[in-house]
Image 1 (cartoon, one colour):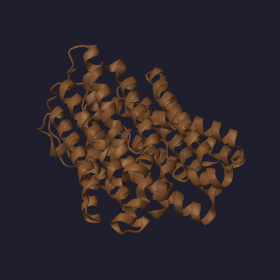
Image 2 (tube, one colour):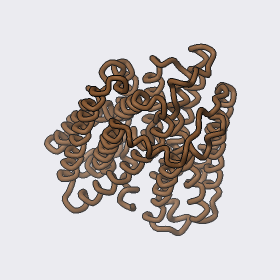
Image 3 (spheres, helix red, strand yellow):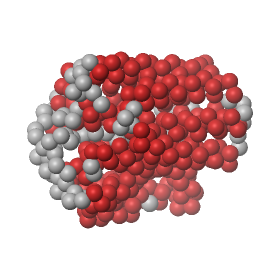
Image 4 (tube, one colour):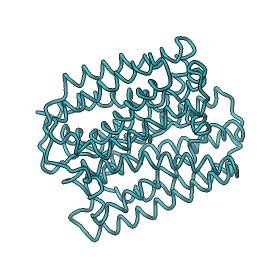
Length: 422
């Protein structure tokens, strides 16, 4: 965990926390009264995404002062990241059944309050145990929010605008992931790590006010059991899709978790150049999330197969030209462009193959992605320590090719069932 936490600041993407489809679109009328009315809460949700991701990754650049102040090792302080992931998995699997009678507007506002409380708890934590409680609360918000976010979008905007709105949410995700670590380090230098965590509180309060003013009432639809998230695996195409997206995230994080040591030791970049590369990564990722919305409606499965293949090719190319700062920068810009856009494709896929049971499928997707992130970072770390970056990047490429293969099989399965295929 110490190794994973040390290099997590290098991650500019996409993923950690991805927007998933979570409620039926087929049977639920749009809650907004007009097209314009639907976009204001979408922008509020984007602010919520940015605040949540900043909260999630704030410990990355503050492990040393946290460990020093609370008398911990860096590995112990890194558990503040692991515990949020654990609670995100548990929440995503069971929040649908636990809140089946609650209006989604009320639930989303409640989660925003929990995010605010989490910032306060961590900022004023007198010891490690209290800080872990605060981080567990962040995990609850992560699992709950991502299990509902795209479902809320489906009820706010027209069906044709759903991919574009999902791209907006993922763009906020990419931006927050890119700036969270350096911003946390900057704030921690001047106002301490507690002040850095507290800085999230006013953003959470602003998010709550904006959402409360713009979100319409969205009553929960239907009933869901505690096993609903697993029942969707009985459908023919769903297991293949879940496996493909899991392999996508395992492959991504096997490489990107250890991007920083690669850039420092192989490419030999300075701190300022490293920051510039990460900034370009984030910017290209935001562009990718916008542009994929223009083509995903007509070429969904082609993109789901092509994107991991392109990422695999970039991983191999980095091994060959990793010593060139300019070449590496171009390749990583392409990686950010593709990797940040890829989740938008999969969330669109989920909205189409599970339009009548998307809340359960959304919870399953979040759990699969969170577990894949952990597995990818852990496996990449073991290979990186034992065999070096070449073997790590080769492992990433092989897993990404596996994702493309499974996505191709999912496409063939969906083609045999034209009523359920995108």
